[in-house]
Length: 175
Image (cartoon, rainbow, N blue to C red; front, side, top):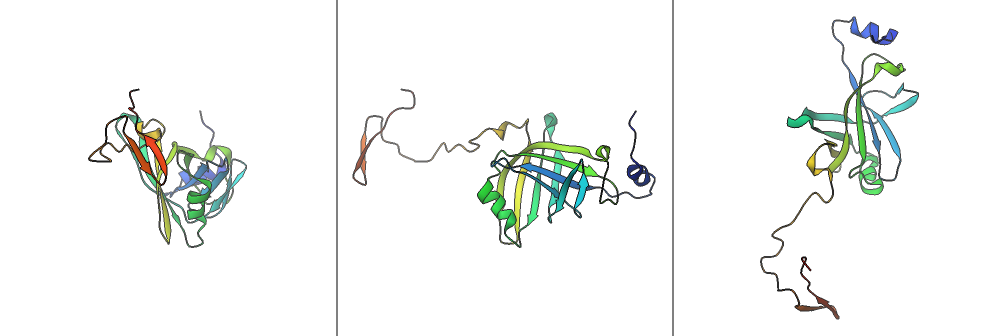
């Protein structure tokens, strides 16, 4: 049987309880970032910083997979720096729900609702959108895009191409 913290007991007893999300991203630079969709809070002995992040369109897919989006406000260019400098492709991400007023929560107050990786991103002037997908998705492996009809005409193997003073011999992928 699970023991509820005093904060969680109070929230469960209310007529309307609105949860909020906290998001943990481990960047490709091995930096662990923790964000809150509400104010800055303390949970699990760490601080989750208010950052204007929004968890959007999180949904279950057939086969137990999940996908969704993280939307960051980008007024100070911090979110675009995260994507462009640290790198987020295939970066592990976890999303938890917290109930209550905070700003301090007990260890058992959070419920994990997503675990996966960051996928594609879209950097705009005022916002950055990062697609997230559960680790069970087939498209988790890189590269995710394959260009099968890159050229309409491909010279045969063995042909030598000259470009910029250098010579390149085309070889067959099959040996």
